[in-house]
Image 1 (cartoon, rainbow, N blue to C red):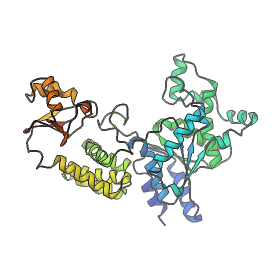
Image 2 (image 1 turned 90 degrees about the vertical axis):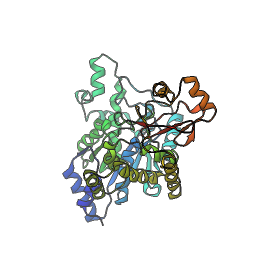
Image 3 (image 1 turned 180 degrees about the vertical axis):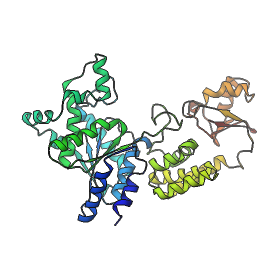
Length: 403
């Protein structure tokens, strides 16, 4: 059995904030003494079913606790989803229909089981208990907090100060999410830092109703491939967990050097001791590209078979091998994740690689332009480009894209 101290080390890897460390250690000690696993709660809003590595940060942490023998309960907010959580929004989120909730929940479950062990994961819908509360019970629930406490939430506060309407029903969202913790008798609840208010409300409600308080664990926001903005599909700086192995491998190789350790901490299950060794190697002058190669293989292997990972490695090596690309080729500064091939054509003209945009497009149509060893089609000129990509123009002209 893994000791409570060692469990704490694994559980706390990469965590942004933990409330309360002493309480969690006590829970882990009791769990070891009684051989009773802790109940780990994760609430999922079924409004955004496409998961990328940024979303997966919390799921990976859940998986690590699952591997330590604890019980994972995923709460699909089908009831709360019909109200709409205004978190981070300047106005209330549009409520979802039953059909939308059901469809999104199914898509979500298909994706979360790429990370979590299906056999060891319990999936619950909070309509199971929330739909059964009568009006008296709802009033008692509302009596556990105050309007002043609700207005501590940044988004409510901002809307109140800017005279943007707040529906009374919106105050019930954090209360109902907190009630999920009461129903499950949760020991730990996880979420991103944007869920701080809702998760801490769970602690407040448990205390008010005489339950032992859950530990609240908040994971940091993961920057995308641009190294600046939060990973987001709309910004094009994301790595999707359902993307093909060769795409995933190549994208991880585009992660900025300064984020290598953070990605090891948040997107892999590598033990903290191993990450310390990797940090030491970097501090002692190891080539970040070599370390990133290990990161890319590690991340890709979490979502793909070893056979697919090997094919991804071979594809990447073929596209970037010295045989295919000469040394000391010209470099072009780009904004990774924000620009397309077409966006950089004016700079390629300035560098003398092509005479005009029309010449560039003519070469594309003739199969004379390659991106990372693959012919670029006219439909793909709007493809996003990244750090370390190589464009081949004609037979002998190469340019490497850098940040």
